[in-house]
Length: 249
Image (cartoon, rainbow, N blue to C red):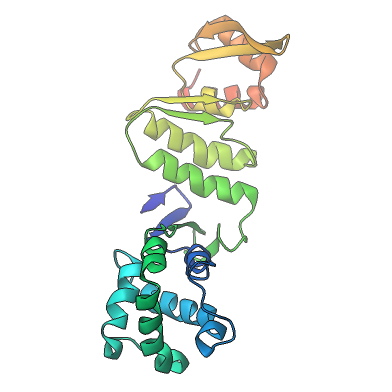
């Protein structure tokens, strides 16, 4: 799945049963783990990693079914240093058939990752490797959210961790395009989103006794709404100036 903005490309990858740690947790569970004094027991975790790595090269429907099929056809699986242990693994699992069946019912989590590309095509980083800033992670996630689906979308402060230039140049055009196809409802402190995102209905709220109380509501052509935006929201004068330049009023 891929999502586009004007200057960025975000790639969403979903790997079925792609969480290796989730698989190894089940593979090395106490109910299945062999005696640690045996060669099989000493190499059990390494065997699990080798099985997973082989499965990950050609991921299929179930890693458990993959292991079962590979053990039934040793010639189809190359586990390098652990190849000699495969007959012993098969014999052991047949003896532990009940425990093995219980483990194979354990779901292995999928792995979902977001990759962010710069405008020149180079990779800025991915969520999984921790190289993206908070703003970059928000950029990638927002693009995916806004580019897929048709139902109403509720966002709470989508401008968080994004700089003003990006909000105006990237996020606002995204919102204006998407609002033609689906309903967008969001809470925000940034005036650029409703003002230059062409919001059709604005609720101006203020906090009283720990609750949000409506000051006014309506379109931006309503003087009271425009006044509330100027009074409450961040960057409101600049947002209205840009709106005036765009619509020439």
